[in-house]
Length: 338
Image (cartoon, rainbow, N blue to C red):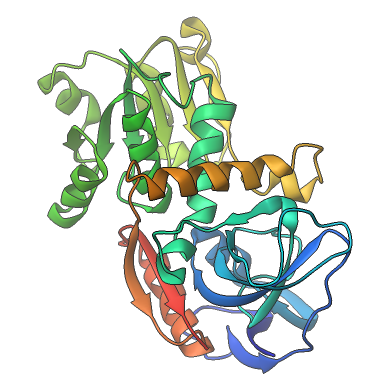
């Protein structure tokens, strides 16, 4: 099968950073789906895993943690899926990724893709939808249906992949959503996703929030830079508020006041935790994707694909990584077809 892989961890402008390879078609284990991959999308985790380091892989390593495709075969213990089913999933960072014509994924991590989306739009959703859902409704103490009623939520980097779906989920749950964006096109995107207010993260947040009538906020999602906004969010959060984090800090965080004085809840999200540690509730990720598919099909959520490249090959994946590393992406970038 065709695949895109690496053996050395190099800067993305090096042609050897991602290369086209031929690999054996995998055979499903007892709990696996073998999926014929039709479309994939890229996420910051792809660039972090690929980032330069001295390690050398003895065998080609395939990245990619979002896919939509067709089930080719199922393992002996799999229930609920059959060959021919159209599925979507984010997979498992400890296994071979989706940048290949065929991929193995534990059936508990997958779901039937939305009926109203094609493979390209479906592939944009899994990782960011699971991340946003787990963070808002499982790590943080908010109900997915009405948990935001009467509450305000500040989303740092609302136009990114996770932000694009988090804004929608939060708005649906009843939050008053304030998103941050620094360019007119990203601000427009946040509003299209449902944010009632947009402020500029390159300017003081407190001043802008006060101008919109918010002396404090009940919860925040820092989806961009944990260190940069740590002190600011501690000041802006209401007593007994909550902050959700997905980016590991570069240095030590000051966990004392005002976080301690206000009893602010600090919630970490890493969507690969369940598959990486084989937790007993791994199936929850398949359930989340099934619920997201329902909400897409009923029109309560919208797709977040912004750009598409074709076909799936090393040249286009290097370009996708380059765009991600620029930090100017809006929504999701998807690659389609072989």
